[in-house]
Length: 81
Image (cartoon, rainbow, N blue to C red; front, side):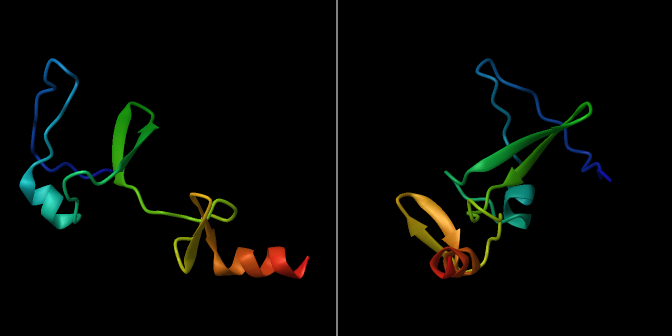
């Protein structure tokens, strides 16, 4: 369920919205951090992007191979086949 922060920001002429410092601090969002954009009904949802496995979506024990993240479980599964 969505919870209102009571904060209102205007979209500028380039389509940008500034996230208040309180929210950036709370969610540990730093300058240049990637954010994923989701749409749910009439809502736009921003989520801090986390690296994840291209096969299973896990965010734990990742190895980068050819600019793709693969978790240790999926690597084990690939090797055993």
